[in-house]
Image (cartoon, rainbow, N blue to C red; front, side, top):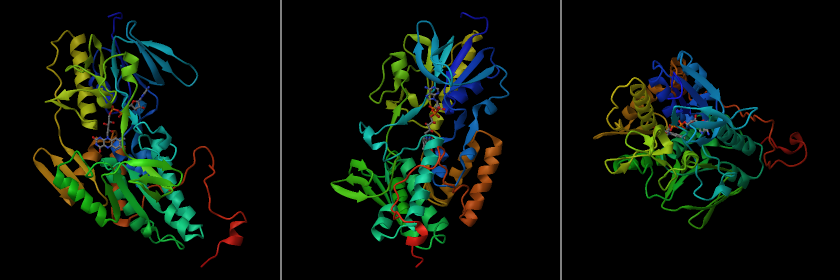
Length: 441
Ligand SMILES: Cc1cc2nc3c(=O)[nH]c(=O)nc-3n(C[C@H](O)[C@H](O)[C@H](O)COP(=O)(O)OP(=O)(O)OC[C@H]3O[C@@H](n4cnc5c(N)ncnc54)[C@H](O)[C@@H]3O)c2cc1C
């Protein structure tokens, strides 16, 4: 140790990084928590911001506020760009400075993942993914804008294209988004438009896999598919997307015209493996040891979505519970090391189960041998998600919003907000002033 009080640098204030910071809050260490955003994001509810149920502020909390009472923790808003393993420092870009070195005695990298378009980065401009609050608001804008454009449009063919929503990827995010859009159009928006019928919107969920929710048991996957279909979602499986452009998608040789395509498929890890120049798995996640450290560097830990660790012959999934448990474990390990206590046993993930919600009042749940679908599973889903929100104020606010939305169908935020001023969206309106050309049939 170079300093009297060891310094622990945590990169990432997501589920893993925050959990590590919490585990270290009473330790005699100095914690520097660096994140490129000023907020911790509850990603499992991002789809509810994208579909107007919740506002961004209901699923994001300022990191500074969450760890405000940790006297040993300093929060830095900045983007880590690299790691110098030999000299034990990370480099950080902030608003006005570049590559500022910050030294560490222990380093925890918990930098998560980003979207992966499986080598087709050209899809990104036409099919936004859902990973950040900015993504969720951009998708919300697109969905709501599509209805506004359709209402102002004369040509019925354009109506069809504007009101076709394609989701690429039928994992939990795709399934949850598809169900939520179906409820939005058939419930909330139904009575508010005069020239188009929101409930006639076409929602298509596609995946090259043979079933939706591929990581769930078959019976739950079938239950989710039936439920989606009962909500009017078209589920197309077994074909990969061949192309995405401004006019829609090409799948199985067929072009589907759609103005809104949302990418809910793959993810790619952060560049932690490149920064460290260590072994990665095929997806690029850093291969870590059973104590979550990096080979030959017992002072560096990589946790959460950006790490790769096998348990019982299978890789651990990229879910919040893995990140939380790994963060807690790493904090505890460092605490024990600095206090001279024996190291804990190797990390072991305790799988509490998985859930996915499909529309209003319906979810699928798998926990050990318990397989549930329907309202009871949805009730459990709601309870668990409320419990894991970062702050009590959010729990209360989300609970009240859910009850309100459940009873009235009204949503928390249906504002179209262009943060950088009004963007020029391709409009089908004729050039003459709208009042001269739009009929009022
Ligand atoms: C839409 C969506 C829905 C999901 N639903 C579920 C669900 O229902 N259940 C479930 O268990 N899991 C779900 N997940 C997965 C879950 O959110 C992740 O497994 C979990 O967030 C991983 O935690 P993490 O700490 O590894 O990364 P994250 O929580 O993603 O945190 C990474 C943090 O690192 C920061 N960061 C990244 N790079 C840098 C850098 N260079 N410099 C500084 N900061 C950086 C980011 O800003 C972020 O705050 C979902 C994910 C998404 C995207």
